Image 1 (cartoon, rainbow, N blue to C red):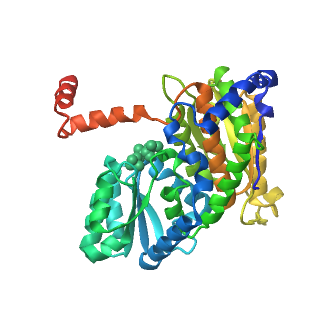
Image 2: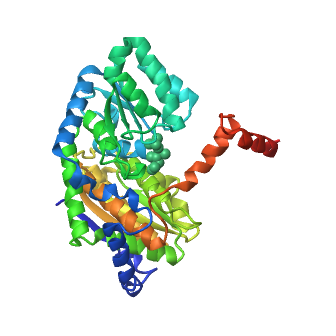
Image 3: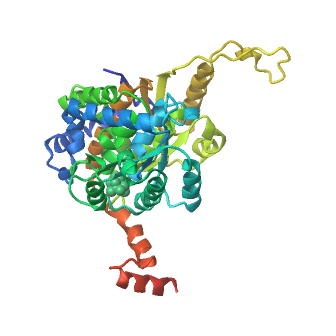
Length: 444
Ligand code: PA5
């Protein structure tokens, strides 16, 4: 099994080992609540056994659709927002070469839409697609989310105008609810290839379903290995053999109770930027409710040491850091010697760039610990499909456990409706007449 090592030694200055041990029965209860499905939100626990329950036939089918799109398209646009795009984006960034727009074969390029309402973004995307052979993977569990619906409307019209309705229907894949929603209705009418997001899998826990698997397969990555990594981690966590998720969940709750209200997920590998975005949604939407919950933040080091480093070292002591450390990088690049040595860096000549990065990591961790920032260190071997599958499942399981320890329902997100109600009222959506009147009076 790929390695995930959780080290909490450097959090123990703020919370004692004894305090953590005192939470043992609480964490055991939370694990049991999750595994036995007896807690709040238990109709959204499909993700718990999703890796094990995903049949090879589905994986083969997804790979076949991915191969077809790869053959037909220069670009595939993945349309979705929140849990319907962040997981795929996280894995593509973690495994891909950013200069190839994610795809190791550089065809098709994969771009995203529907995760914002930027008019310029959509204009620029349409211009970029003009004259290119493109396909669309549209992902929306509800099938009614405004941002992806607007983007899909535009892109579908563009594709149909370019290649005709029949060819467009072959190049569009919809991932949505099995029966409900506008997208399901349209997909049935137009004969799109479709995949289902199960009712009991919430958006932010859906990366290991077709939601994440199809875009990742289109990019040429091994989704079987991704699922294998997740399956191994699932088996180890659910059997109780692997306590890493429990340790992480317990420690972050102990720190929260000790006044550390903000968790900063730190990486030293630029490929993990979107993994942190995925993690922020997972923990933010799962825990931020009933006026409680750790605020999940993220930084990319060493980049953000030159912007946020000062605050973290010296600002208010309400934070803790969780560092994801990747032991091995994929490639070797050595720093050259320079005859003039004007930058004074010849003492690094011959060293690998990663050696410098690792010393930046260690030096920063030590400085932040000295500055009163408790530190949880999560080490993984390398960024591969298998380790990422394992890490995704680890964070999902820890999130469920942690949410129950916090005393919230980790699987709903009632708070995200508030902005939508106001937006629809302001846009005078039919059915919102009273809200429209009230909000217009309020804003004058
Ligand atoms: O985690 C969630 O449930 C949300 O972030 C959703 O994924 C997001 O709002 C998109 O919803 P949908 O897939 O229904 O378009």
